[in-house]
Amino acid sequence: MKLILGSGSPRRKELLAQLGLTPDEIRSPDINEDPLKGELPRPYCARMAREKVLAVPRAEDEIVLCADTTVALGRRIMGKPADEKECAEFLLAMSGRRHKVITAVAVAHGTQVWEQDVVTTVKMKRLSDLEVNSYLASGDWHGKAGGYGIQGPAGAFIPWIQGSYTAVMGLPVAETANLLLAAGYPVYGDGS
Ligand SMILES: Cc1cn([C@H]2C[C@H](O)[C@@H](COP(=O)(O)OP(=O)(O)OP(=O)(O)O)O2)c(=O)[nH]c1=O
Image (cartoon, rainbow, N blue to C red; front, side, top):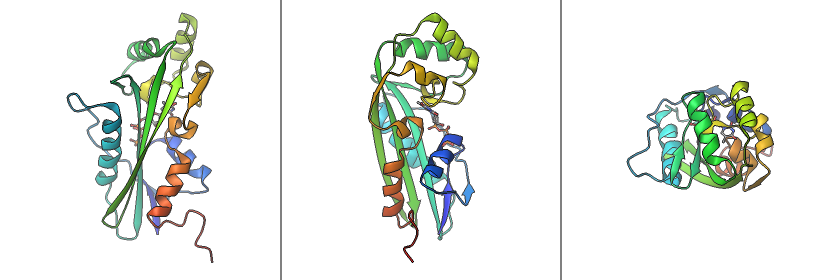
């Protein structure tokens, strides 16, 4: 069986490697990521993962894995900031507060889709102007939901999480292994 990673995110490829898995191919999905009117963060995130996995074409002997990571401050969805200004706005909104990071994973094989989402609570310290400006200047925020990456310099802003570190980074490895196994992929070899 061939494993197709339906994601252009380098983090997801890295996290898959943590399971000892190298995708046979990468096929980035291209979907409309605009939230629906009034859509809440968790259903939005689950919908994104499902739409991504259905947007990636697959042959019969292929299994496709997609994910979506959404940062939520209350009911507000914080996507990938368009520019430094928006990123600063996100960081200041999260400063000194807790927010949630949701990562939904979807696996498709044959006619079936297996899905799971993981919700992690993240506490961000109260940020000084110097911390925000230095992080913006690092450029690390580019392409990251909520405008930060826990695995980079912004890790210094996060004293506490409850949930899954790998889910915040983009792919919850424990749940991903289980979904792949459920879909029939030999994560730990075929035992022979
Ligand atoms: C919160 C957070 C997000 N991120 C990243 C992971 C994801 O790449 C990105 C969220 O955007 P996504 O839309 O989930 O994924 P993507 O557009 O990067 O890739 P694809 O749709 O092709 O799979 O934010 C981190 O790397 N670290 C973090 O701490």
